[in-house]
Image (tube, rainbow, N blue to C red):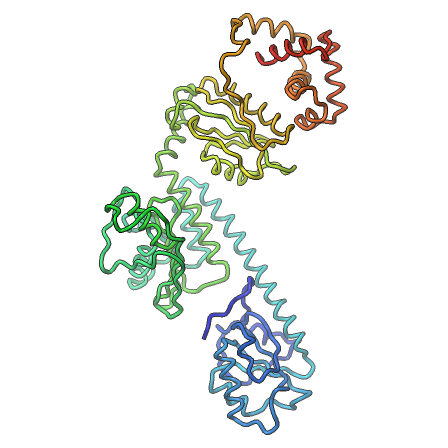
Length: 543
């Protein structure tokens, strides 16, 4: 029987539909198996419904297709075709065509093991279909509630002082089974839930080997018994005891000529191994997930039954465990942790910068297109796109610290301002550069704007101390009003454009006009004079 092309809703047990008193349905033939589920309802009066069924249906018919004098041979062929198409059950409507369900149909359903349901005259097929969708909606709501509660409990567990055991305990409780974390060597390093029998433990360990990729620090020699799946695509086996796997697309850059242990050999082995696999042993559902940290860790679960939402819950746990194990065992994660601790204990940024992996860094300010403020998930996505885990959400702006040698490119959906590469002592200035670049980028509707690295300019010919003193004196009348200083700086940088300055500052254009007029009055200067503008711009660059 082919697997039903299931809809994105949980199936409904046939017994639940029969329990609806308002429908009055009655099973009169076939097995009374509580495991029989219905994925949808379909009405057909075709003598051969096979071409019109997808599998998993409750087929509804009033017997219009039944010819006069039809005998056992007709009904046997009819029922056999429903079973061959993967139909779950047959609902036969009594009246107006037939006063009772034909006895030959009852016998055929009993012989083929197809549940036969009698639909009384007062119940329409539309009512049966509506009841089925109602039950599906209820099951879907229950599934979403269960998954949401599980996600919250797993996230809470991941924040505990002992996150890995806590996540495994929560997962085992939610699945009503066993959860095991296998290390890179293939040995269990943590587990929670009832301990299964030896047969199940052995099968789960072997299933973990199917998905466990070799890490560079833990090479592995294949054995004749190595249960390696095909190198690409998806493999499915529906018979009990056969492993079901799903693997990523084959990676290029490897081949038979690559030396053992080389990156190409490792990539080939990674491509050959699936990301997850499942099996059923001794009535226990086994699933293995390769954690996405590249360290060779695997999450294995063993549950006595498979409920809707189990795969989603286990996937959430796998993501959390990937983050936990990856952060604990990666040099970059340990370096970031050490840098943070040293900063909190009073170390200077210049002392901790080498722990982050470089001496010079760029500050990137990003703001998502549109009005929505960035959330931590969006900020992490931006950091991933820029190749850095050093991300900070500051109100409506996301700040990312990127190694100075790494090129910063456009990111769809974001407007970015990029500073010049700077040593740790100059990071505050780089932060200011990125903020100003972002303001100009938003005002000019430019997806990415960099603070320019220029050769020696005229301003560099003035001694810094004298330039700073001149700037302070020139801007003294407005220095107590940051709003005026920022507005004047932005307005000058945008060549006196009222509209673009208003966009950059998120204020009305009349507010810009009022602030610039106030600056002109306090500075006692003609801001239409290009010489005055140049001198003010020189001073503003020193602040």
